[in-house]
Image (cartoon, rainbow, N blue to C red; front, side):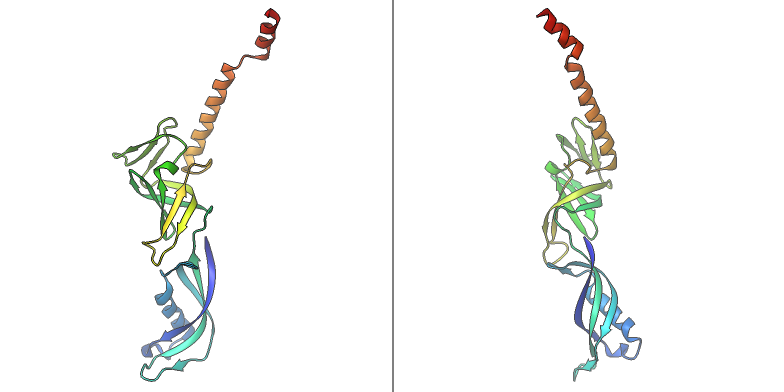
Length: 206
């Protein structure tokens, strides 16, 4: 989930930057400090968008830089369990598929790809459903649901677990495949059940 987050922090302005537009300088310094940073409680800082209220500056002897307390607005991304996310399949292995969801990659374990028995095809590379013939390959765009979130100190060490087994998830064309499969099963069931007329005639004979 993306959201705006406001913090109050002290930003250092190097001596070479003192005298130029203060708000612009603080914004550039804050971007350099925060963008791309992972916080386990807040999430990943995507972008610093604004510097608000600025306090009086102070200089620390022997440093030469100026320090300002300021309100800093940033856009952060924090994945939430049960959240729906859309992303592109970035890698496929025998144990599952990785999907790029914003700044993070989520893993769809092979057991969570689809509600069908599937085979891994290294030539695609990807997975193919045995009955539905659904395919999942590299660079496919999919809709998935987050089932587990583990945010660590860095983006590379953080993990997201995804599923696509629920109805409506997966690739767009899977919805049409599911509808055709439902119709096929419904038609087959209808053929197996005797009609009301056949039941009546059978009861009369008995």
